[in-house]
Image (cartoon, rainbow, N blue to C red):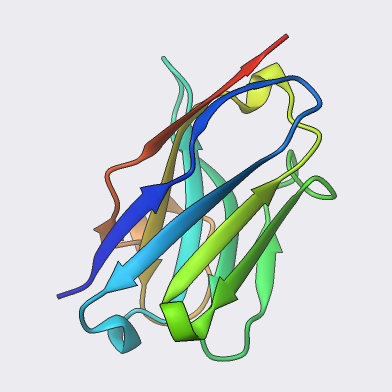
Amino acid sequence: QVQLVESGGGLVQAGGSLRLSCAASGRTFLRTVVGWFRQAPGKEREFVAANRWGDGSTSYGESVKGRFSISRDNAKNTVYLQMNSLKPEDTGVYYCAGKTGGPSMHVVDYDVWGQGTQVTVSA
């Protein structure tokens, strides 16, 4: 069984940066893609970025392209989300999630989720 644990959230001013971590444990090879999603109060969960374990290919949501970067450390079984030029609209709970197969932007395709970490960007 795969477990995902996020960390690194916090409060930051607009224009600032944060780096989130998603540490995976268990049978990680069964989940070939790790994605980041976020959810603001009263809104649906939104795709942020994804990384495929095998070849390291990445994909991003339109609202974060050019500002966020997803990367991984195979030795640590950890995926990172570097968030730069943060905006108040980036505020929300950030989740990492795992799935088998190819990358996806759809929440329903992911079957393993972390508990989430809060990111708050002040104006």
